[in-house]
Image (cartoon, rainbow, N blue to C red; front, side, top):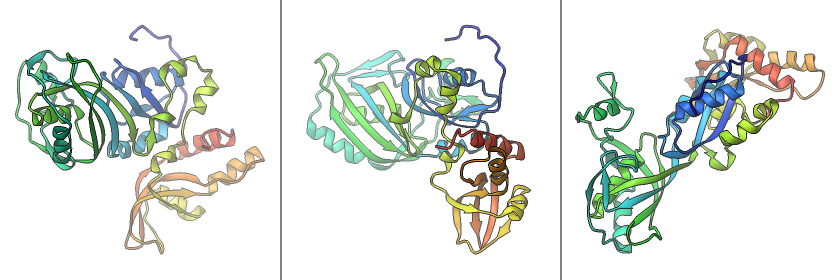
Length: 336
């Protein structure tokens, strides 16, 4: 995984790659491998998955990195297994066992804890996490044997399904399906549920199956990506605007599009809106003229919001990013 790699010629790549992160890889390792395979100049992920976790990890390339925060803020769905009766110092299977207790859990106990952990709940972030205290990640303190005070945070569990897992008597466990808000620690949830059941628990497996409307069924594995030819890899990319699926579209004419890209507010008859994806037509017509075929498409200019009839710019694409996207559209790629 960490073997030296041959130098490759980087190129502008724009779009979103839905990766099924493999077990044992850090999110950054997976990102760097995918970036190397795509020969991309610029890439970033949308929030980390622990090495223990697998599943949906959207990777943003080029212009898409400007909207990666939207995925950080998105609701997520996980499937997990928590082993009952055993607590570890990390809250998951990678840690050392610090306590063992007998397990005597019934279906009624399970029903009772579901209601306790659904809706708005408070969590104390785990020490083994990337949250920072005085500029240093909590896991760095934990590795040094230092426990620091952490304030409880409110998160929302929209849906919670818990069932006793069919395992042998030596390893009692529960399965969990959790749809939750950003910032939810499934490790902490498993530990807290274990305490509520009176036996303690730790997280043994974790898989993210959805985030921000993206599903694990849409993902590609690193192994599959590695086996592909270059053009096949590029065809795995979703367009930049797939990150803006919850935004209302507003299309500007040539003059207003240029002013908007300069950071100027535009006035119109739009109602107030928090999430707006702004498009312009002019460069698309130029791209159509170059290719000589295909329908004219509006080109993404950036994100904005509307207040009191004013379209207020937020994150904007640069002229060179727009031109590169038009070249991709002209070559009939990234039109999904």
